[in-house]
Length: 344
Image (cartoon, rainbow, N blue to C red; front, side, top):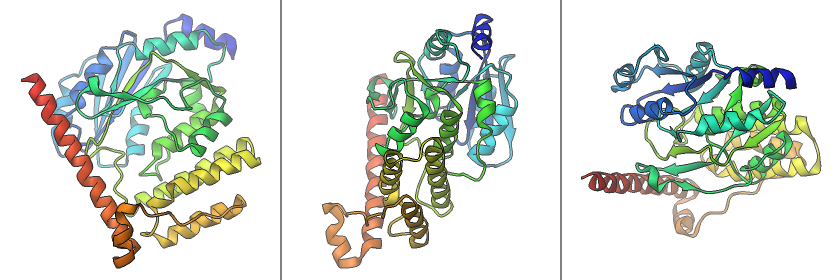
């Protein structure tokens, strides 16, 4: 294993940058440019357009070359799109990149160099990510407990127990580890990335965190592959992903500590199901009971308590979702206006 990893890194490995896309006309060109700008020059870029209804495919085709492949497929799920991109790749390492996100120019090179100092092809590289709307100069990099070298058990425990996550683009994964983890789960239409990288971590020997390998995550980009609106189907997907998260962590270690992390994880995500899907709440309570615990009814914020007292939990929940949609829309509009004024 160790010798194989060292030999792989000595021969300057090929890195596959895989970009699944759906209705990403407004930002995919910038995303592709960030992939082309990598200081690690030995890359291939594979873009799979999932039957966009805008000009995403046309924009992507402008970048076609010997090292940039553009594929069109019929309307499928995000997981199917990602599996299609993976099936066409030849790289020794895999870099996933959502069609609205960006990589710092040295992202891949920094992670390759960090992995070359180790002796295990199943070490996975991660890095910091910052959220932005239109201007990367305004990206906020907020350090979390995941921004360290961690064992699989520690990473999953912290992610679930402290309600943390890493963005898709932060990872650099060897081909060996990718094949060990298996393909993306096509049953999932939401949190498919969370479930997939949990499997990557379980199959790995741990993370190597590389502080200079930055990824820029575009918030509230609109009709993206992973957007969540609480719709039927996505809640079922979220429930399945949560069940799998619990299964993966307990398979590594079934202890009071890991069960406590699982309980916190279930409780943190409970508001997505309450009160709209009582049937799925029962499934969550069953998982909690198997862990030796019981989920508590989510407390309503003071902003919506009066609505709940008069009109009931469903009305308060609708008000909460409506407020969040309006707030995000105003933030997007304001940031884009400032971006336009700065350019002017």
